[in-house]
Length: 188
Length: 248
Image 1: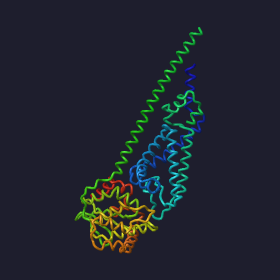
Image 2: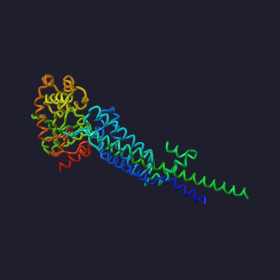
Image 3: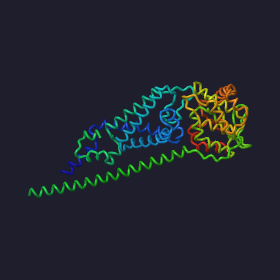
Image 4: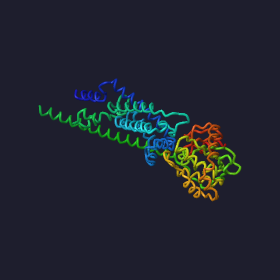
């Protein structure tokens, strides 16, 4: 009897209350992951270009731009892959959200300073081709949309089809802090 | 009776606790292993990416450099006529500096190995100040140099000292200083730089080149007349492969 009851409570714990919403989380994960993986993959093979694209913003000191140019594509790909499989979903979604905030700040500041650059989001050296105009508005809209995806995932991890559930990582948080309520866990 | 049940219950609770503890432990191990795997994958990506960006060591030997009348500069071993690698660049353009830092040594090596005829086309693409005047001063000064070796050294110094796009730079004094560093001894070099004698010729050459070559920007690299992708130009190993396969 007890066994059965506890078994039922375990499966209840692993399955969020509203199944439709957990599918929304999954969809948000796929969208954010897809964009991050593509963006990272298009840049990682030519890091010198990636560095140049960062420099085009004229925001960071040269040594930092170098690190960001090399590191960002790797971070994007890893973040994207983890979101896709749903591993450490909430923490990774926070990283994804922070990236989007950084991109929004970068693009908005380039726009505000009147720079004429390509965002370099999906490769390139940040320069516009002759006769091409900056596309700041839609770049910002896209990144804000992705920021909403990230925020949703942070609020309602990990969604269906996630390794977090499969490996029991989502269950752990709730069982680990026995004295903590669900509300506290959400805030964590 | 009641004592027995409570003992049994206690045992059951203990067993459950133990099971839970084991479960937690397993979870922790899974988590550590997972994180380790992620770190290894991230490290592998990073190493590969760093290799992609790595510049070639300049071998030191440089193919003969010739300053042509039309403003282009040819770097090739005697008798090497193809493949032709055209480099369209602007001394003030930051991406050109990045190209020079990343792939400049590859082009020098390829020319020294007799695997390519490299042709530099310094142009001015900027239309606004201060970048336009910076570029014109530098390119005009480069045209004051007739010796190929000196020109190449000057070319490298210009990129090394490239000013920001927001300030007035490449002053006559600086250009003369770098010219001397590059080994220029010609007596009229200083006057030539100060008077910007070659600005008109350079501007004409620039606009002609941009129209004829249908340039979208700088740097543009062409191998045997065909523009190559920046993902090749800025990856030294890919650039080398592209030039070598064009030479076959």
